[in-house]
Length: 63
Image 1 (cartoon, rainbow, N blue to C red):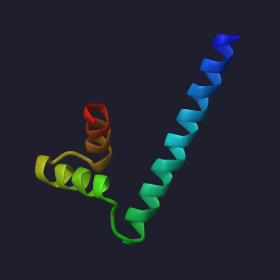
Image 2 (spheres, rainbow, N blue to C red):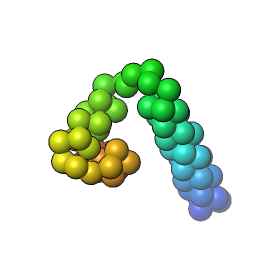
Image 3 (cartoon, helix red, strand yellow):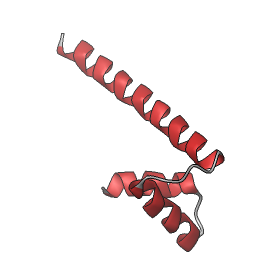
Image 4 (cartoon, helix red, strand yellow):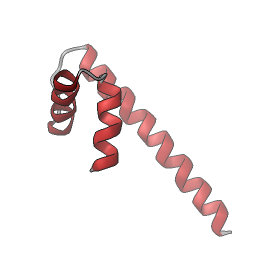
């Protein structure tokens, strides 16, 4: 029973992260602006020469 709960929670987390990623992508593409965390990630990507996605992963792993 506990493994089933863990699987469902993990699947829901992954689905939520995918939806969140699509939302951030669309916000960037239509130039609506950024939320504070995305602004830090965008600054990191421009300053370090990495892609926005890589900086987002690094930022999320650290914080």
